[in-house]
Image 1 (cartoon, rainbow, N blue to C red):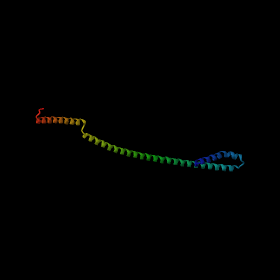
Image 2 (image 1 turned 90 degrees about the vertical axis):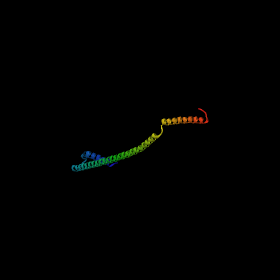
Image 3 (image 1 turned 60 degrees about the vertical axis):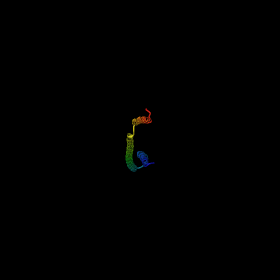
Image 4 (image 1 turned 135 degrees about the vertical axis):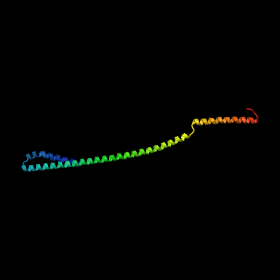
Length: 150
C-alpha cells in the first residue's frame, strides 16, 4: 500500500472517530473535561494528518511536473538530433546526385562528339560512290592499256 493510500485510510478512520466520538462519549459515563480533551486531540491529529497529506500531495505533484519537464526536454533533444541527422542525410544525397548529374553531363558531352547516324550514312554513301567512281575509272584505264574501248 502506498504512503498516500495509508495516509488516506488513517484520515478516514480519524474522521470517523471525530464524527462518532461525541456520540460514543455521550453514551459513556466519562467526565466532560476528559471528553473535550480527547476531542481536541483528535481534531489536532486530523488537522496534522490533513497537513501532512497536503504536503505529500504537493510533493507528488512537483515530482510529476519535474518528470514531465524532463521528458519534454528529452523529446525536444531527440527531435533536434533527428532533424540534424535528416539534414545530414539530405546533404549527402544532394552531393551524391550532384556527382551522378556530373557523370551524366560528361556522358552527354561525350555523346555530342560521336558521329550521328545521318552523318555516318552520308559518309559511307559518299565513300561508296567515290569507290565506285574510282573502280570505274580504274576499269577504263586498264581497258585502254589493254587496248579495249569501254
